[in-house]
Amino acid sequence: MKIISTEIKNKVLDSMMRLLDDNRSSILEANKKDLDLFNVADQAMYDRLIVTEDKIDGMMTSIKEVRLQEDPVGKTISKQQLENGLDITNKTAPFGTIMIIYESRPDVTIEAAVLAFKANNKILLKGGKEALHSNTILVELWHKALAENKLSNDFIQQLNMNREETQNFLKNPTEKLDLIVPRGGERLINFVKEYAKCAVLVSGRGNNFLFVDKEADWEKSVKVIMNAKTEKISACNALDKILINSNIENYEQKLTDIYQLLNAKGVETLVDADVNNILKDAQQIKDDAIWKEEFLAMKCCLGSVESLDEAVEKINHNSGGHSATIMTANKNTALQFMEEVDCAAVYQNASTRFTDGGQMGVGAELAISTDKLHHRGPLGLKQLVTNKYYVFGDGQIRE
Image (cartoon, rainbow, N blue to C red; front, side, top):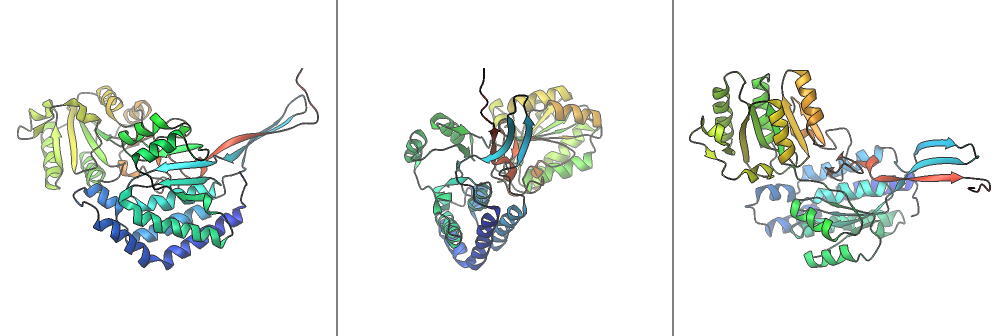
């Protein structure tokens, strides 16, 4: 793949920021077409679909942040000279062609493209049909930005395919694919893994847990729980499951308080059998499989555990590997939790809502990876490159 200079890449990003600003009304009009066709009963997806003036500002900010970041291509990772005289340099290199499959969010059309492009990759954008009009105008603006700087549209392409066409494309792509990133639920992830012929980097489900330890500050715990559960239900970093140590002081009163607060906010709260013994009017969980579900709704589960070990075991058995929080004043307890819980991001005394590229200092993100290879957590600009060895010799042969 031909390497584009940082100067040219940044000029494309300058053009795109200007085009977004100049075409606000057209973007909002296209988004309205999508909204008019959408079933607003799915509030979480509707929240992801809608584009506002503030969201357009956010798109421009994402591009600006990436523009200001150092170009990740061609950076030296290591360098050595062997006894036989070979000079070996390991450098960062583009992946090549990345395909991303996502639903609802037109801002992904901006963030995914800006990150892939600055890392010198081509990107194939497979958005959901519910955002077709919004995504189409944004890709058209990308193409204008590329054309203004004498670059091919091939760098940023939109794929409009149904499920069967997508399946066929994954099995027999019309061009070489180097990486696929499915952003969605388990059904989408399993679909891609079944048919893809290249590397798949999973942006997994949320289903995030919060554990209130017996040494937790209750006031802080309530504040964090309410933020993580209710601030934005459509986000993959929202809270779904709450575990409370039954040995905490005033346990029964604290259970009652948090249950009533959640209900007052409109959160449907299901409880396990132990909690149901105290909150007798609460709806008891009938099927333990619900502990594995990501809700993306005003809904959560409230359970009781007797120890840190029990909490860790329950989280590792059920969570999506995304984010988990412990509320505790004991640093040793927190460290044990953070070391043993198998998630991309683990927290002490903070909301899971911070698992986000912008909030974690990465900037714009392609996704939140729950895989352990090639990267875990927010996929920012630096994570969208691979590596390549440059070996310089002078006629050496291996004997």
